Every structure is written in C-alpha cells, then in structure tokens.
Length: 249
Length: 313
Image (cartoon, rainbow over all chains, first blue to last red; front, side, top):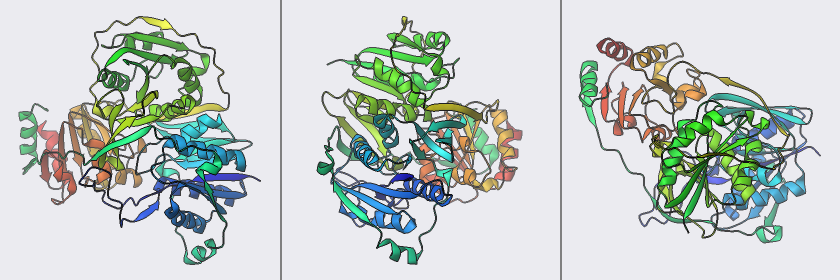
C-alpha cells in the first residue's frame, strides 16, 4: 500500500508565553495549553493532500512521548489521518532516539514518504528528519515549500538562505516542512467523533528495541537577557542626529 | 582530552561564506589542539585559500569530487563523516546549509548534535536557545561522545584573517548516493548587501501596506548601503519574498544597525534581531512591543518619516 508516515510532537502551544521556572530546572508547562507542533500540522496536511490527490492510500501518524500525547494523535486522526501509532516514552527523548524509533516504524510500515516538521517549537533542535534520512540511507528534502510527486520521485522546492532550491529525490524519502508549504485545515466536530473509532496502537521503546539514551543532559534553563530600555526621539531630524552621535551614520 | 575540531566550510564555489569564520571563533572558545576546515567542492582551491587565512585555523582539507558541485546534504554528509574519526567535534554554521547537513552527519556518526550553539562553557558544555529564544538551555554532552554542533552565527564575531594554515587534499573512498539530484536554485539576488552579513539592515513590516510600499525602504537602504529585511507578517502578506524574512522562522542576524519600520515586534521577530548592536524602531503605535527592545524609538507615520530621513542623509 502507498503509505505516508507523519511524525507529530506534542508541544506547548505557540501562543503561550514561555516562562522559565525560578529554580532553572525547566520551563513552566503545568496547566499550559498543549498542541501539535505547528510544523507537524503542516506535515500532516501535506500528507492528507497527497492522499486526496490519489498519490497515496494511507496516512499514518506517529508520536513518541508520554500518555498525554494521545490527545494530539486524536486531533491528527480528526484532521484525517487513517491510523495512529503511539510510542510511549517518558522524560526528554533526544532526536537520535526519536529517529531510531522512526527507523523501526519505517521498516515495519514501508512508507513512500516520511513527512516531518522542520523543527519542534519547544526544543528547536531541527534534527529528526535529517537523522532519520541518514539512518535509513534515503534522501532528505528539508524546509519544503512545495512538493510534487512524479514517477518514483518527489520534486521538492526548499526554502534556503539564498532563495528557493529545487531538488529531485527518489522515493522513499524524508521531507521536512517549512511554514509556507500549506495551511492546515480546521478540525470539524463530526470528524472528532469519527476519530474516536480510528485505530490507535500503543507501542513501547523497549518492545521496539530502542534504548532511551541520554547524551545531551540539560544542566539549567535561564530566561534570556533583556535589552536595556532605549530613548525616544520626536522626529526624523532627532533620529538622524542620534545615529550620527553614536557613530552609526 | 584536548579538543580537535573539524569545521565544514560553507561557500558558493568561489567565496567562503562569513558563517565559516564565525564557526572558527566558536571553536576557539574551546580548549582546542587543532581546528581543521573541510572545503567540499569540485575544485576547492580558491575557497581553501580563503579558509587558510583565518586566524586560528590549523589545517584546511580540500574535499574534491565532481558530485560536490551543489551542496547536497546527502552527498556531502558521507564525505565529512569519513573525515571525522580523528576529531572530537564537528561544527557547521546554523544556516540552512549547515542545519540541513550537520544533522545528517550526526546520524551517520551516531553522535549527538547540539543545535544553535550561542555560547561555549567547555568542550562538552554549551548554551543554546530553545522555545524561539524565550529560554536559554545549558546542555552537557555525555563524556566520550563525539560532538556535532551547529553554530548560531549571530552569537559569534567572524575570526579575523592573519592565519596561513597548510592546505591538503583529502583522499576519500566514499560511495556517493545518486538518489538526490539538484534541479535549480532561484536566487532572488539583488546588488544590495547580503542580509545575513550586512552591517546595516532595514526591515519593513505589514504597515508598509504592499509590495509597492516596500519601495520606500529600498530607496533608504540604498542610500545607507543597507540590506533589506521583512517581518514574517510582511512576507505572509506577500509584500516581500521569504528569503528576506528576519526572525526565528527566517534569518537570525546581528548587524551593527537594525532599523525596524512598521514592525510591531512579535517575539519571533525579536528573537531574530536581539544580537543587533543598535536597534531603531519607527512605528505609529507607541505601545508596540518593538519599543521595549529598541535603543532609539520614533513614533509616527513611516510614510512621512522615511522620506524625511532620506533627505537628511
């Protein structure tokens, strides 16, 4: 079956104002709204559109994380994913561990494409897609803003520093999404009801033979340093004078 | 153990990108016995010569292959991985080039990656921004692990010239994958300075109102010799192309002078400019959050103020 695997991560919602705990042990996540990582939502939307165009038959959504992640998997199913896989894991899961889990699932599910967000907006690592592609020894097309599937290959336009780069990658391949790839659909209430009946399988790291290695130990968290408050000027002439005085013009 | 650091050079085939000199400065913050720069190209001679001049660089490696014409991560990563054995660290810039490539190298080496290094505390301890820069994480890499790192270029000064490192050819026997092929790149290049390295940057926000409205910025930028950037809101509205985007989801920059015009100052934008030496904000809303980070603020109508500034220059 032509299948697309989509990875999602449960993260603090992008609208939440992040606060570092007073003791520096982390950021405050208690009672905070949690959502699907926005880049992963774009990944799922792209997979659904490819399926709707007939170029794939099944969209499988996967996450690695604690029991609470089921909420986000149910949301993904309500968006339109056909089934979900939940790999239970507590604590911080490093990108290399997530990539190893995805590799195991890729071997099992044999997808045409794996689509992931380019980064998660919590740890901002931006590694998982490239790591999976390396371990799988398959192509990667990161920061995608356009994806077209042709015979056995994907033509992907990438947002790079210089502008837009286009690559052809043989499938199977890993694609990671940038913001302009698409606008994810809204979930409708009847779909939420339907999603409750869709299959959601739970797996464990140990059953998959993946060790939750910790090689990047968090030592402390700090709030960023604030800039000093500046001065206000009243018109263009004062502004130009202030810039000249500071040697900037 | 003293560190030996391999840096992957970013270049366009002819010129070394300044991001590489910033990686050298990051590497020099570590107690380091050797800094080598690898230049992957079809013919690496010209770029290798530039890398050899950077102060602090001990060796430059020419990694030459006809497949290296375009910087494809799938093609370059196995070559760098093959060179990595003698090194304790492998660094690259946190640009789209480096972010794409370094994590693939991390996967091939099964070595953990520290993304967006903004400060070095030791050979194994680094600071990096998380949550779009709303928190700074200090992270310790496990003893014995090779460290792959991407270097947040806005956090480090470029290493000066003054070196004269020997240049060697690396001979590698590596299978190059054929599954990834370059098609094209559309560079929206202008003759203005490069946004990521310009000393002066002028950015516009949604208040410019249209792509047409951005033209007054271009006029001012040309007079100042500045690069032009845009907020995400302006890019999303179609007023400017995405490669001009400044912020967490665009380019993170550290110019001497940053002028934010008609930009309210969403946190993701501020994350991209907080290392600028001087920030100037011009906005008609005196309550806009941009004024909280601005060194010099001016409240008013940008369509009147910008031409006035231009006249005064």
